[in-house]
Image 1 (tube, one colour):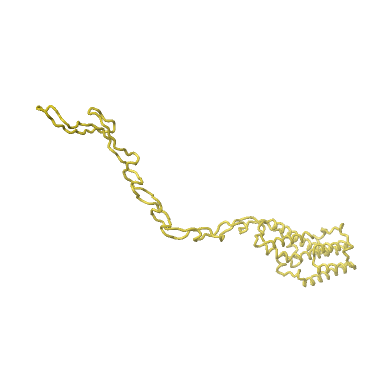
Image 2: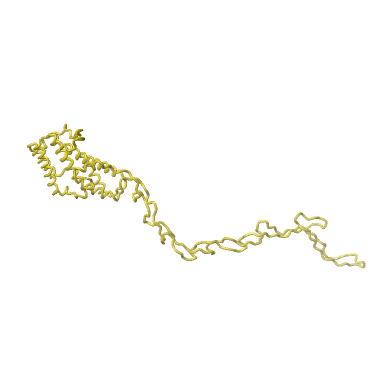
Length: 350
């Protein structure tokens, strides 16, 4: 078994070196560091990864809260404020007028000299014209008119403000007849602030997220299958390693990586792998967790399990993130949508 472990180490080094020339696996150190993948000892850091959480963002995805204010002709004109007839009448003159409330008209009616006037009326006597007396003794009067008596009510005009009295003042207003003073203020098309809402990631950060994961995922998938096959080599399970390679084929692992895994299989088990003759329908590819690894973490099996668990956790977290991001309604770019769906489907094939 020691010879086989040496072979494992040899082929792991060989795979790593060969992979450096693969375009798909050429991931920068910075990208790996951001994922916590620069070395196997960082698997514990990977296990601490958690899916993106719903957080509150003040962002354009949430809608505009306020737009910037501008003073512009499109907002409307502002005219000078003056008191002119263009504004309409504010007050009419306050003066006596027959139509004012409480005003009374002139009235009169005739009475006999002994009669009294109604309340509010004043008795007035109008002397008649004297006639001409005739006769030796002036016993006859010719012509003339008798005295008359009238009851009179004098007209009283109360004061009020009527149009007939004339204009005292005009209203104060802004009117185009007064001349242009400036322009009104209104909302521009440029946002000043945005509403707050909950989401997993803002839309403008999604392209970078997708690009980063898209570049890292192939290496993670390759590492996933490499660690899995190494585990079954340690367990001396030829069937499970063969089925792991078969699963890698289904998952779209790069041809170069598949060639490397098949070469490792041939070197360890001294036979060429023919996938057409492998029946994996009853083969369980689950890695059993060894309780002894708690006390002996440096054992080859335990080191492989720890690394594998870290990679599997990274893939689970990414899948959760992809599903959550797809549930957001702020993704407008069809290519980004397709990329997210493609990443998710690739992980589902593992």
